[in-house]
Amino acid sequence: MGSEETYDKLIELLDRHGAAYRLIDHAPEGRTEIVSAMRGNDVSDAAKCIVVMVKLGKKVTKHVLAVVPGDTRVDLNGLKALLGGTYAAFASTDVAERLAGSVAGTILPFSFHPDLELIVDPSIQEKEEIFFNAARLDRSIALRAKDYMAVCSPRLAPIAAPAS
Image (cartoon, rainbow, N blue to C red):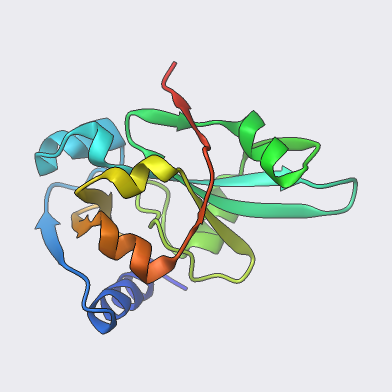
């Protein structure tokens, strides 16, 4: 699935659920701190989306889409413990992009792939609005957090750690 197809799927999903969102066009950028300034949102209101690979044994690997506030980082050890894994690391770029359906820097806080489990830090639901690139580098979405939770019903777990 290409980025344009993923973008269309996202808009269709949000419209089908009657979610309140705004589209924000900006110069192409995928880094959270920089694109947040371009959009005019606080970095803490950005949804940082990272694909993580967790080894559950010698032969079993699970991929997780971890969503944390933009001013934090994914707690890899916490995610590993949550899933009972033996090892956790960021997925390779090619694997992350294949599972997410878009290029790095534009990964959505939604999973459209059966092999990608969505896990969201509970602090995301306390936001009024969350901001994220919309499967493209030149467009973002501002989405009401309560609508985000209602649309995707994610697994909630404390997976955010302070930025180092």
